[in-house]
Length: 321
Length: 263
Image (cartoon, rainbow over all chains, first blue to last red; front, side, top):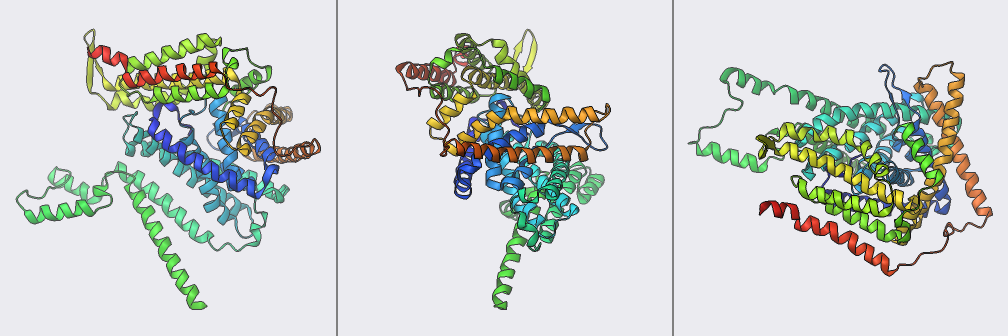
């Protein structure tokens, strides 16, 4: 997922750098406050560990090919989200400077797409809540796979948007997303399974090493909601890929019967024109131009239902008091 | 990232690098010049092939003045080519607007932008490789710290660079030991891999704790001692910064080749 300098415009790279530097500044403040100087050698050695772990390739079951982990969820699980983010950002800096893996100007975008998505979104919002409760093999694997898939999905969307916004490639956003999302969903599952295996090994051999090792004493209340949310996002992603390749049932039948893709209202009808104009102005995603429209719609729906559930929960909590 | 690439880079880092002209200058000046060059080069329009070649010439002049072999600088840029080719290849297919004719052959904008993407990729990686080869990773970390990057970040970057060799060697030893026991089966099953990585992680963390204990015993108070004599900013650094930033920025603003061809 490392982006190269050649596909990005300086403006997009600059915005990415500002966001990444702000996140790093917050991470430095949080890490120094929590652990102080003790974290410096620990973070350095963990960064070196990630390099070493990326050298050892495992065989992907059923395919014969091999792969390695990026290690964001693993780092955050051991060091905590902010320190994990700092270490993965340093690994990206070293990869860009010494190994020509990813550009220098685009480093900010790479840090957002790879380090921030896994350590600051995937781990704290998905993996960690899912790990709450009694730690079983299935729970560890599910938490790890879900976290990795969500992180890689957001990362893939980020890469597509940053590249197409730069305007260097002629590939449209929708086509880029259609090409990136399925590949990264598969990579996310592989990364998640591999990370889950290492996390299970650690929780068996040295459970105290895991960040917030006392999670197993907490109740896993949010796990069901998170599982539902992730499943609905995955379904939306799957259906948009299917929907983009075959037209809507009604459109298909219109094409079959009339031979045109969309029946245009008669130009003389002022009512038609007025209603159309209103619809175009008010529609958030006019005429589903992107294949990702389903995904965006689903995400908006999820956020709305989450806010509603919070409102109801607050009310019921107040009523109980 | 492949094993050969890491091993190759590590051996270069371990054996040290040849003396380059860049070491005579303050690393802050060299690093700032690199940033200006990258911004100027990447802000050229995607269809302006001529001025991009001027940027390439500037980089070649800098390479020959630095005393670093052009081959060393270009070699790393080959690594970035597959990804750039993969995405750039869509341009000739999608964008078929004709913009010029050459010996009777119509050249489309897609082909020109495809070439531009490749050259941008090669130049960006070569420029970074030139600076890292010329001044070294540790000097860049020093420069970043002196430019105001917080200590926690630069110190752990230095630690990462220092322990990269140690941990990678440990991983190599573990991998070799597994191969010796595996009876010729090269493929690493996921279950075995997880045990191997888990053990390496536990060993790395134990090592980090030992290092911290040893550092405290030697009077560590949150900062590594400065290496050698602290270098000051001289007139020659200002001169280098002015020349190395003015030329690429002027090329990006005035685009001389495009201007001449319009005449």
